[in-house]
Length: 100
Image (tube, rainbow, N blue to C red; front, side, top):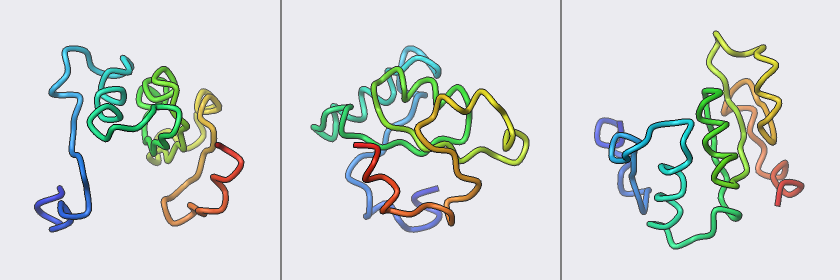
């Protein structure tokens, strides 16, 4: 996706669960990415579209904004996320002040 959209230059690190021994909801992909970025998981914000991804990021001790796909929009289990928004267009940078 990064190559297709020609946006790879905007990312310091690109990592995927496919490179990990365990997949989501195991937190290893998020923990490894934080390590590669040399940041504490406590200082990370994750945007996730799935419940397993939300669980994985929370297990890594990161803040999570759920942006569920249309089939999960009203999934009450997403309450475990720090915020739930319906679209990335709904994201407001000022809304994260209360998260950290």
